[in-house]
Image (cartoon, rainbow, N blue to C red; front, side, top):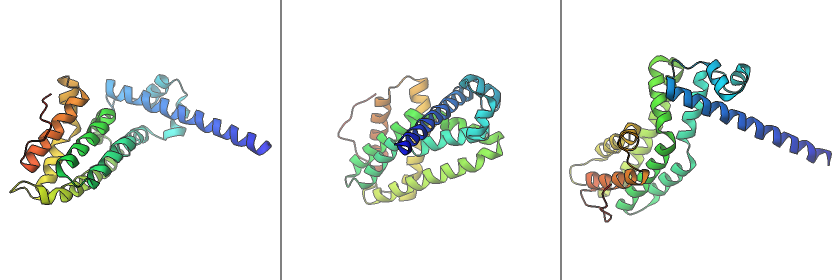
Length: 213
């Protein structure tokens, strides 16, 4: 019984630690977005999160550590990863691109702002640059794998390397930000546009669902 009680206390402690960790991360993200990464201090993050400065350092060690953790959450988003794997396994090229468009929508819906902040921060903070390179390498490797899977169905004149470049260009987080945040598209409209545009550009055909945003 004593062992079970101790396990319960440990579980509660871990749960509280996770809440604190998330509170700090969300406070930092709000400040990064409002004031910029460079202008945001650990002290300001601690105040926004309602914790001690020492707690921020104990949990994340540094400001770049917070941003790295936020980036990892985007990179390993479970819903987006599941859709991307489904896209790779789908045998029909138009459906494959539709699933891929959904994975991008899910990733940027929660993480476009974080990725843009992360890239901007890398300009002035050397501690961030290695993480940016790893993220870009991982993204491009995934796009290359998708382009390779699409190769038998690509329109004439489009090689797998060109397809990967098109996939990269059309799915940048800045495109999501421009269409959704600036021009007011819904996430559904973005996903429909992306899926349709990828089919047109890569397969040279019109998708079965030709709805316009």
